[in-house]
Image (tube, rainbow, N blue to C red; front, side, top):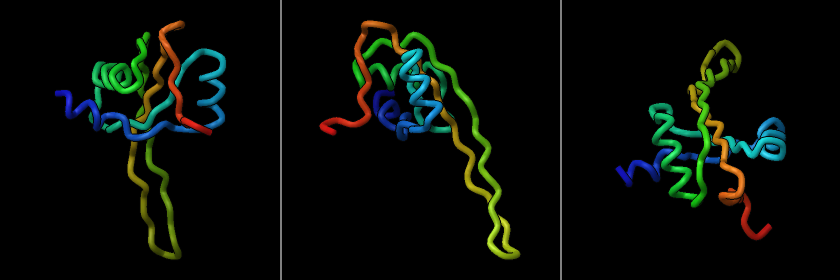
Length: 98
């Protein structure tokens, strides 16, 4: 189980909306595996960043359709998680030393 926890979080999802959520409501946005559950995401964030998680919300994102000439394709679907950190439990740093 603990080995899977290290594979749940893929990357922080950095966007204007995500940075606004972080500043106002202490909510962090991550790209996660598509088969990850909310409980697994909560445990992975708590273990990786040593913070207490208050809530986890998830959203399945549909991959965009793309075309080059006559050839059509589609980017893969992915999942993102909105993780609310309890106040006073610590801070999640994306960029260390910058």
